[in-house]
Amino acid sequence: MKNLIFKRTFYCCFFLGTMLTTSTIAQTSTKMDWWKDAKFGMFMHWGLYSQTAGYWNGHMAKGNEHFMIHEKISLKEYGTIANDFNPVNFDAEKWVLTAKNAGMKYIIITAKHHDGFAMFNSPSNDYNIVDRTPYGKDPMKELVAACHKFNMKFGFYYSLGRDWEDPDVATDWPYKGGRSNLVDYPNEDLKVYSRYFKRKVKPQLKELLTQYGKIDVIWFDTPELISPEESKELRELILNIQPNCIINSRIKHGFGDYKVTEQKIVEGLEMEPWEACITMGKNWGYIEYDTVYKSSELMSRQLLEIVSKGGNLLLNNGPTAKGEITDLAQDRLAKMGNWIQKNSEGIYGSKPWKIQKELLDKRPEQAKQKHSSSEENTMKDNENDATSKAVFPEIRFTSKNNFVYAYVCSYHEVKVKIKSLKDEKITKITQLGNNKKVLWKQTKEGILIEMPVYHDKEIPITGFKIEY
Image (cartoon, rainbow, N blue to C red; front, side, top):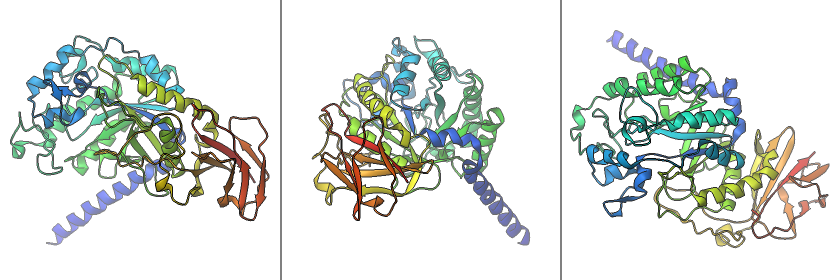
């Protein structure tokens, strides 16, 4: 009995100690510095589901990019999609420059999504784009090379605990077998995760870390039934090959460098490194009829909200089966890029200020579209996206190098009063991206600043640099 108690205590202390150690790595390691400063990245969901574009057998498919499970399609039938997958318009440098011009600092792309199909050359498993499609090439090789060429950080997404091609992947959410391939592999009790882990996960991770040069991030998804020992082994495998690679929290069991929130933004200031992954439209992969995207104004506001709370925004778009970023996504990103070019000083490399926001409207819920730009913004909440679609006047604050940056959002009055600065001794105020003199004065109620006039196509958000 004493030995049993000792063993339990030892293992509890071992795993707790390991989790505490790994959770603080991000705080002490310089490899995280670039990520903490970057603030803005591009997420790309691209796979066989891009080919069907939201349809299956002549109807709108249930489950969107997850339709293989929702439509109960066999692996053999789903695999025939690869026969037509030929992204002849794929241009890696255009993708990278689209992200770079939007102000993004890193790209994360789906190397393998839940369907188990590898979008890279995988010698260990022939269910991949090189062996199964008429394209017959490895687009990841070109994409990583383009990222290196244009100084863009790069990371691979890898679905860790869902794989509908492998016979040993069971799931337990939202119930037993709830996200499993039960058409081809109906018996969940016969599935052994460790067999899949050794047979597919480890070999493919080695391929991703050895075939393309420097990889900056491994972005895991849906860890599901992975054990603490396997999470630890996976972290060691990655860092033994690429010591400077960053790993997200979905490696599970506390072995990640930063945490992830999906389709939501944390409520308040978050001290640990964190990232919100959010879609531009309603879906992650390309869906032909998903044509209602968030406005550039709304997405810029979300970026500022996230940065003011200490996080990064990983903004998703789904390229088409031909390898193109949609015109709608390019338009939104270009407008964000024009705005960021003028206002980036208080974003990149910034930290949260003592105050994250100040409302400029007492009842913002009644002003959701009152001051929106001319760009259409009809985005509504959907099943997975829990982010607010409200557009109302507010101020978001960041800090850097002893300066405070105040971003006045969606406000169209002649002057703005910043009450949060009323007790600060201000010496100078400058408008970001503008050499014109800013008219301002300090009162007992706050700082009164004259606002610029926006033209129709401009994102109505102005950044001010506040000097003490």
